[in-house]
Image (cartoon, rainbow, N blue to C red; front, side, top):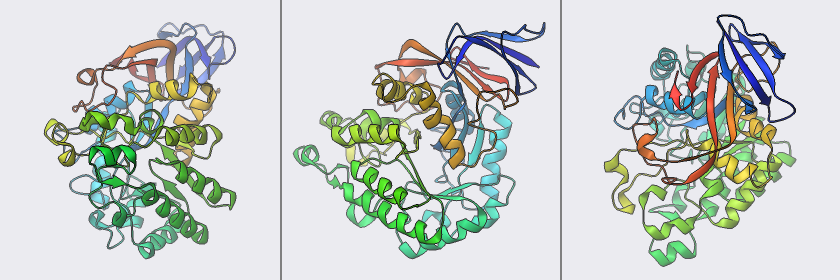
Length: 428
């Protein structure tokens, strides 16, 4: 099976070239004569990037298939340009053992639109009391590479220390939802002027920053790999910069919504804007964009969090936190980072593909667009725009904060090991 991408610009650089893909591998770049049986994609000068990798996706299966399944989530991922996603552990039952992670992995293989890598829980039942079977999951069929209690913080410092120490022998990464729970009891929004004026209980920045500082120290002493989920404050970026300067093996992600949206949106009382950690200030967003550009924050991860209507379209205090993100991530990065000149398209490849693949230890993802490399590829029309409609997205849920927004950058094709998984807004 062969595919020719005609007239693409790898990383948005140089003159358009043809890219020949055969048996899942890039075999030629330049002026290519398409084999008779080849599928041809006319790129017309569009940007060709390595397939995107999402370190933070909620696929809800098993347990909440009414909001998302591995099938629908994989479709959303492929349409968004992703070739690999990491499925978080807060399912029902929790992915805290080999049986559940192997189930998630097998379902991803069956669907076949993206590589689905299950994230294992750090603690049994996400209860923060006892370490889960990290070694069993790491050595299972799923070969779990990332562990996280995301949605909940591993708040006990001794337990977190033990997890980090154990992770070094397994060559895995511990990903932390940084939130000191004693500082966020009843919290509904970023602690600040707007929350006070609107009557929301505040979620202080220090609740995130203090855990990140603690865990960076623990990781440094254990010589372990720590990953910080959904960084939301400028202070956290400062802590990360300090920790990296000391040689700490810490990486971090920022979500698209924390790059673009701010707590100004709270004035509408619309629960679509409720997320954990909460939307912060414009100053925070500005500093997060700068930290992503300079590498202090390593990558963008969606924290794709679908919710049923009854769980989201309700009064603010009862609404579940979370937003859809897989199909809009590229466009938000284009809007906040490319249009502003903070990143070029090679930089987009770094934050959406290369660094997340390295952090997740995926040898065949985030690879250079070169002959002999796996053909996990995403084609992007940088000049096109589209209007977001939640009901038209591939996810079962429709809780997007970007409803009605006109956004730049359209994924026109996604290839997983040379096979077209999405093209012109359709699967396959």
